[in-house]
Picture (tube, rainbow, N blue to C red):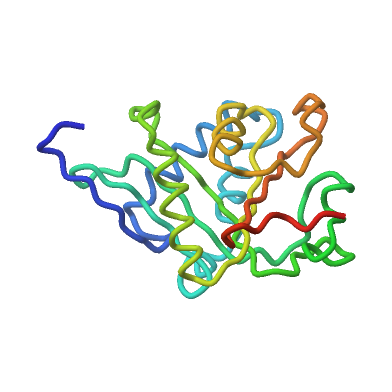
Length: 195
């Protein structure tokens, strides 16, 4: 980025045309890494699996970082209202989930964390994570949750480097685990309850 570039962070509805480059590039990324699991139609359905309104106020947000009006990175969060993934010993911590694996504290789930392939290695993903965290705190969330694929080691490394705790046995090969689940507590000085 040069000193004349204008960078802004904006919220958008999932259906806004400015979000399309993010969804299109995520589709290519997922098809490239997980081609045996998805057809292009299956993948588009997966990217649109959650209703668009879940990524809007009051429980969600979708942001893009724009440079000179062009989206270069983005991500979203929504209220997590489904059972969570992870190893049984980490999911059984008291006060975090109920017997069915549903979060028992207000939990924001990050989705669609993305950096344009033309703008990687610039720290944009860290900026997206930080901005989403600020917005999740403002929306009253106590905890964050996300999953990434086992063939996305750079994403897993980013989450570990930015304070996320794995909900899986990190000594196992990622392909043995499947989706890699992470959590992060937002309350100052708070960590996950220990069993």
